[in-house]
Image 1 (cartoon, helix red, strand yellow):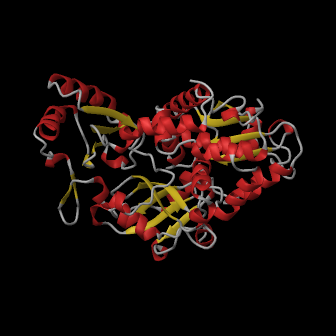
Image 2 (cartoon, one colour; image 1 turned 90 degrees about the vertical axis):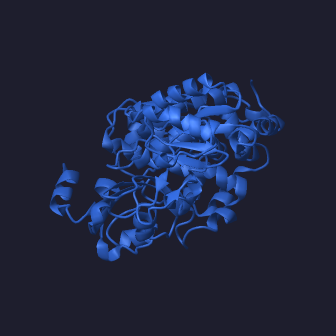
Image 3 (spheres, rainbow, N blue to C red; image 1 turned 90 degrees about the horizontal axis):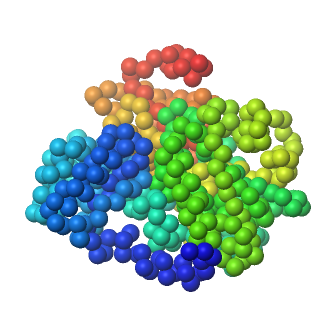
Amino acid sequence: MSGVSLQDLRNIKEATRHRVEFTRRTCLMLCGGTGCRSTGSLEIKEALQEEINSRGIQDSVDVVETGCNGFCARGPILVVQPQDIFYQNLTLQDIPELVQEQLVNNNPLLRLQYKDPVSKQILPRQQDIPFFAHQLPWVLRNKGIIDPESIDQYIARDGYFAAAMALLELTPEDILQQMQKSGLRGRGGAGFPVHLKWKFAFKETSEVKYVICNADEGDPGAFMDRSILEANPHSVLEGMLIAARTINAGKGFIYCRTEYPLALERVQMAIDRAREYGLLGSDIMGSGFGFDLEIYQGAGAFVCGEETALMRSIEGGRGMPRPRPPFPTQKGLWDRPTVLNNVETLANVPLIILEGGDWYAGVGTENSKGTKVFALSGDVRNIGLVEVPMGTSLRSIIFDIGGGIPGKRDFKAVQLGGPSGGCVPAEQLDLPVDYEAISRAGAIMGSGGMIVMDQRTCMVDMARFFME
């Protein structure tokens, strides 16, 4: 397919909708993120398909490998749709019984379901599990729902309709206005207003401009960007396309570290499929605007997370920061005006254009709008990927979603912001998660790494680890 139109998008959405809304078939949504793959999800997928085939029910059941489900501590994870039945910690030995009970007998297999650690009650449905119930998935809206390697399934969830609006209905000024209304701030750590960065680049008169996605996620305990790219790569591509349309950039780069092989594979697949559909390249959707993308693989140097160092790396030089001004929106990649945003920031953009800036700004705090994705790890029961409204307290994230500290130990501190950040102690556990509040506490939001520490942790050792 080449050169899809707006009507083509509508036709694809309608033709594919039943697959992502689970209206016609039973779908086994198997987590295929890096975490679940490391615990054997690929082998489980093969075993599921063989077992389904052996029972002759393959015409009524689909096995779909999704991106990261988010509940990483419980992998491999399987969710049976449309019933929303959640299974965890699967092994190859479980598959024959699971298929027989769930798919043949229509009788959920209780021993593989989630049991609340306090009440000891089994919670069969995913949406009733506290880890999921307290979240607001906007950026992670497609996790566990679509096959990340299918552009049609992304379109069925309103994918590329925001890009169509940006290309066919809105002017760059209109887009900037919506971005300003949204109050979106950069999710890479600095929290700079996105609309201002785009506006500075928009005003530059250069004939050559660039858009860069920073996927060089280097903070210890951080895996948000990797998971977004694995589960929903087209949302990032669409965000970059809208940014490019706004500033009139013809070329973009996704800078991603080599240590993320699955993310790289799925992003390249997304780029290839978008090109096939004419959503990258020249004259996109008949708009007269052209934009194309390529991946640049970084070697994993922490310093390349800084935007000017990252650009120097793409240019072929040593990744070292350079003084500012001039700022990248004036002289960035190869001294041309450049907009650089991280993965999570760009994944927010289609939602803002589709739903409107005022809608987006309806969630969050006065100066920190929307949601934030965190990688919750360390001394906490429910390690995983969480997305919550800005302003949610650390206590709610760590105890309501994270399940608290295992072993009945006391909470000591939570480390935020990676090596550039700081630790928030127990007496500030009710601190709301927004840029200003965390800064006043002596830490930074950072890209979203959140490492929980219990009473056994030595803070001197923690400081030494980050220094090293």
